[in-house]
Image (cartoon, rainbow, N blue to C red):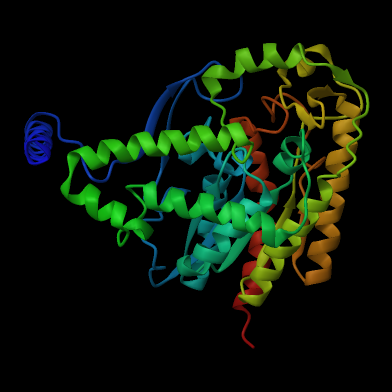
Length: 384
């Protein structure tokens, strides 16, 4: 009886594979590319969001190995680096690449700027990824834009921070699993999961379900925060119904985790001999905001009693506290620091919500960052 059941199962699987391969084949590697219609002032109505197979947004990066004659810049951060509401060519990292083209031409080089941004993730996630993958991409310069997620998304019910090592162990599991699940990621090519997917249509579909389950679990646990431009009106409505707090007090201050994470990331860059620039996170928040600006906000702040709607004045002051620590840490470890907060005008011309750039904001950011990157390049290329 058991043998009959086994035979039926094997035949059923074989028949399913035959039907799927013949009629509904799913490719082993699928471009990370989605078309979106959105109604966000300051950005295009229709965009294509895409990443290359290495997980970067870039106009020009096509290989892990840096080609000859290329000066490679890698930008790291959250959604303000990823910029999921914009075409790749409209992001600040792509605009920066265009700015650098005439700068590098006299040096016989071409720029290649790639953005590794992950919405809703904190700086320790980036440290976890960098330890495993960054040096393999041979960056000549790294730009870091962090702070907004650590400020807002940490500090919820039961939150504690014990050590970078403990947090990294948790983040490492997420990063490793994502690599194994991602059919586009070449780091997964030697995994058992990839070998199954290579020969099985069923395995490819199971893989998609597993990825969705893991993403759902990560979102539920607070390790990942996912948002989409189409959902912004609902998120803003939900946000306006949250309890209002003129000042937020959290016994376990998330700045401790952010401080430890940004320090660990910069020490890793220094030990790896990778030059870097730390960018202070710019925000729309300010002491006094008009009604239209207030209506665009939706970044809640986690507290031990749940999410709240914090006053813009407190948010602006808190962001300044995070940025000041970044500056101190960067200076101490010998990195260049540029505080974008306040340099980019705090208006709806440049931000469409709490912290995300409009297309004009991306242009402004690239124009501000560009000369500093140019200065770093000239220092790096000076003869010894």
